[in-house]
Image (cartoon, rainbow, N blue to C red; front, side, top):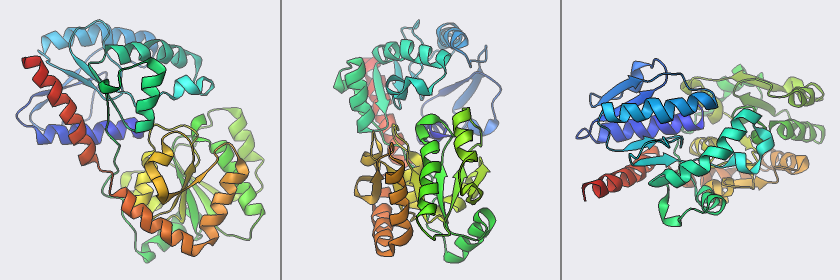
Length: 364
């Protein structure tokens, strides 16, 4: 799972377990794993059709889901990814994580872009209340869709408690497995355009060209070339043999790979939050990240901010965390302190307060 998936899993699980006095119905669009039915007060329901394209979205949310609301006597609908049923008058609360498609439409395929730009303004207006994951996204939703500020609540993301500093001997073993025994920078994320991997590649080449460093680069996430230009950039790199792709990792491996890194490099130019930054800070790993959107809000003074549109700025960030030991130590200390401000427990509690308030209003 990536950001939306972890948000859903971690928050909904906590809400269900903390409130056995309520009955929950989970709606799926395909057969589901039993591990997602977190407790006895949860009923799993599969609705057809499987929704992976705009036409199917419309059918699933506006017909199948509306019908299921009545059948299962639903009082309130919570959508962790913001999609709502426009045909139902049931009170609905949606999570809008970010509006990247409004600002960088070129980063999405046409069919997805058309759907998102047409329907998310409608979802924002339809929702009884909106939850988002950063103050940046809150302001963006207010300004872009002209939404009443009182209608939006911020519930910051968290990170798994499994992320923690590693012992030195453990780091050595991980470095041996993933970076030929060398120290390494780590990037965690999909190879989407907004993750800025193309500039990350170029910046790493600049960093290596200007130093004698043996620090390598580990990319965690599917090695799936979204466009030919990204693959072309990679193939032209002078130091591409020092870049390692792990593919998706199970949580226990991800914890080790992040924890053993010399620094996390996260040069994304658009994020509603940026969960990998919290995972790194919680692991005692310094972070270098873009200076745009929600990222400065997440790291505050615990991260090194760089211009995500400038290869050399990213490369300079790499050089600083690679060579300045005293600076790295201060970043680690500040990062550990900052990470304490984020927790999935906090997120779930904030979401529940919104749901509970809405349910109370229904009784009046």
